[in-house]
Picture (cartoon, helix red, strand yellow):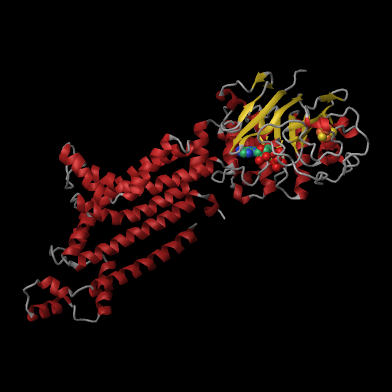
Length: 305
Length: 328
Ligand SMILES: Nc1ncnc2c1ncn2[C@@H]1O[C@H](COP(=O)(O)OP(=O)(O)OP(=O)(O)O)[C@@H](O)[C@H]1O
Ligand code: SF4
Ligand SMILES: [Mg+2]
């Protein structure tokens, strides 16, 4: 188990560096940073001065090495726009995104797993059809559209929930639902498929032959096995939700890291964007790693050789 | 004491399939006394597993199980509420399945699964249950029982897993064990060991045993009673001696054809093969289902065939009262 974890961890670190190098190059190729900072009315001399000041005239590899060296020490430079240390800026916003992420994945699991189980117990029943409809709708509907509909209905028409901001827990309700719904269909269908398979397994029949009651058979024997892939999918979904979070935070003007990323791209605020990409990819890789570990931990066939 | 522990009359299992209804088990009767061994033999698809599962109440709702009588220790299994059935299952009657490789839950240790079998029915501590589990693992011939208890099913071979299943079925000292081809999926060398083990345990614990098997050598050695199934019916039944001494149904004779003397046949030998295929049991089935393969068939076999008594418990279902000697 330890060797397995270490191997995965090593791989994860490697992937993170690769991602940061690629994103750094792409961002620097996508436009001249000095022009972005100086603004539209800047003179040649202004731009040259900025290039000098920020070191944009140095070789590219040198710039990356310097950035990386500082980044691993937690120094991501100054935001061009806020004129604040990027690390501070992000730390603040990240807690909002994490809150949203945790709420959303909890919402997704708490709806998807029971629904998937119910659908699997009675395949082709009304509840199965409803579950299928919910999941197809969830997959067909873009988050921004669903978000806007929520705002129209709950904020504008019924005035129940605030349409934007991140001050109170009520501000998190709609974003949680929209982002959670994004992850829910895949989890629901995997739960349903897993339960259908497992309920027909010989060991479930063995459990019944022992005299176990319906609930025990369903949860202790069937769900325990069907949930293994669901747990690892959820971890992967957490990673995907970071991307979804950018959209959702923008719709609801939730001041999280996703919203910051969205704004910073528009402002050509390179240090902020770079730091966010690095942090998002770290999270993504962390979740993938967690998913592998959770799988190994839950399935003795992987854990015990 | 003379009441049979299990008394089944006119058991049918119907399965709805796309082309109509599959009459997989068609009105079978059998009785089993305390401490007796009933062997059910018959080729693949004859309804042996369905019969076993019907007695245990383990068939899904989609399958229709009906019986005029299905009594276990004097209580009717057919009308019994689900809760009472659960209380019986694993406690008074236990089952060992055909598929040892997949019958244990991959997520739990052997010890946990054995303990569960006991603790579902008895108020005992985990430690007490573990002690009994270790004890029984020893009894079914598993060495280093203590460390096996901490292992997971995937760490055990098929033979060991089936021994674990046997131990599990014994946890509550049931009165009846149903073993559905417990060795079919195992190596030939292991097969004999497992069957001998079952027979020994059964004698030692004075349980009734229903053994579904293809191995007529084993039947000859351990059966008190034999039921021969063909296409969902019991075509011949009686004491082992009656069946082996005077097989009366052409199908039984076909099966026994390659088993000259009971007890001298090597274990694991396959049933005698009879050319032909089993007719479809979908829709109405009339007449003797064996007639397409029977060398004694006459026209009357297509109409209702009576069940005949050949003295004692011995019964068979054939149009002929006296069979000519050259058969199958
Ligand atoms: N759930 C089911 N759905 C449809 N048909 C079934 C089902 N279970 C059993 N059958 C059919 O019923 C018949 C009897 O099956 P059963 O499993 O009792 O046979 P068996 O005598 O145990 O055979 P084997 O020696 O291969 O185990 C077979 O034709 C089988 O295909
Ligand atoms: S009833 Fe007819 S077909 Fe059936 S076993 Fe007897 S002789 Fe053969
Ligand atoms: Mg079978």
